[in-house]
Amino acid sequence: MALIVQKYGGTSMGSIERIREVARRVARFAQEGHQLVVVPSAMAGETNRLLGLARSLSADPSPRELDVIASTGEQVSIGLLTVALHQLGLKARSYTGFQVRILTDDAHTKARILSIDDANIRGDLNDGNVVVVAGFQGIDERGNITTLGRGGSDTTGVALAAALKADECQIYTDVDGVYTTDPRIVPEARRLDKVTFEEMLELASLGSKVLQIRSVEFAGKYQVKLRVLSSFTDVGSTDMGTLITFEEEDMEQAIISGIAFNRDEAKISVLGVPDRPGIAYAILSPIAEANIDVDMIIQNASTEGMTDFSFTVHRNEYRRAMDILESKVKPAIKAKGVVGDDRIAKVSLVGIGMRTHAGIASKMFGALAGEGINIQMISTSEIKTSVVVDEKYMELAVRVLHRTFELDKAPTQEKMKP
Ligand code: ASP
Ligand code: MG
Image (cartoon, rainbow, N blue to C red):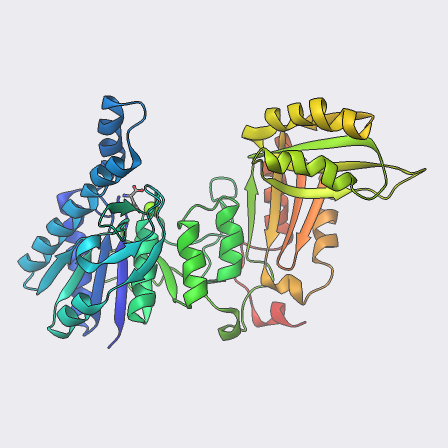
């Protein structure tokens, strides 16, 4: 017997019929003897509808009131799901975030969970109940209702699993797991059986938007075993989706797990800057002061005391960054020029095997060269190699890398040998 937290997303809760399906799936696990805590999202579209109502009254509604309004979507869901569970003969009780006492900070519309009181839930589980807890919401110290940011029910699920020391947190959604890359670009993309937390963070932050990123960080920190599965398989399905796990447990991990990409960045180069202490600071501190995040940074070796300095920013902040550089930085450091390009894409190869396998980066660069794709910038971390290329070659780059690293094939023991 295990204690399982199951989170169901909005599409899984999208209609009365879908809610009955969720109840049947929960019942199946209960009948197998497991203890269950179920965290539903609001019914599909409901959170948008509620926020839209508020915005139809005011262009700038108070965040505190937005939380009062948006949190009701999940309150309806827990009540409906609990009634559906009763109809199947199960004992079940629902709780809103504040009834549990999911304590958060007071950052309305993006609050963070501080602690969870597990007394009610434990008591009900011990009495043989399925416990249904509203996702996405909590309460601050002063009793105000808070919400956790869009997609926040994932984080509720993981936080409950951590607080209850659950055996597993299952996230049911409308995709059946995490893929090697976006199947819309590479039809042969393969579903991963397992991926590590670190890889998942890279894949998620780079655009594989399956889970709220904060929930993955949370799961990594509290060592919650997390699984992504589809709620659109039949209730009796034994499909296990993708397990997001810890490296130590798993020696059969592939060298490369996936390819992430995005078109959200722009690159900027400051040309002909003197190569002396303080230059990188002089360029980037006005950017930081304007609250513009910088991703990749490259500085060349200098010739005759001069060098070029390049970095990337979010595309939405490209204009602002260029203006700051032209008006403030260029005159101050006597740079020769500032040039930029916002038609770039970043493509990243992600895999923990990079730590122990040499030659991955050169194989990557070779594959791109073979297609005539010019690499404009490169950055690496322990488990990721990213390149910036012209945006028009992005899909080609993703496809050629997927093929080169044979990501359509399941990893074998052979591939793991150092
Ligand atoms: N209902 C909330 C949203 O739409 C929370 C969630 O679904 O995770 O963002
Ligand atoms: Mg979601």
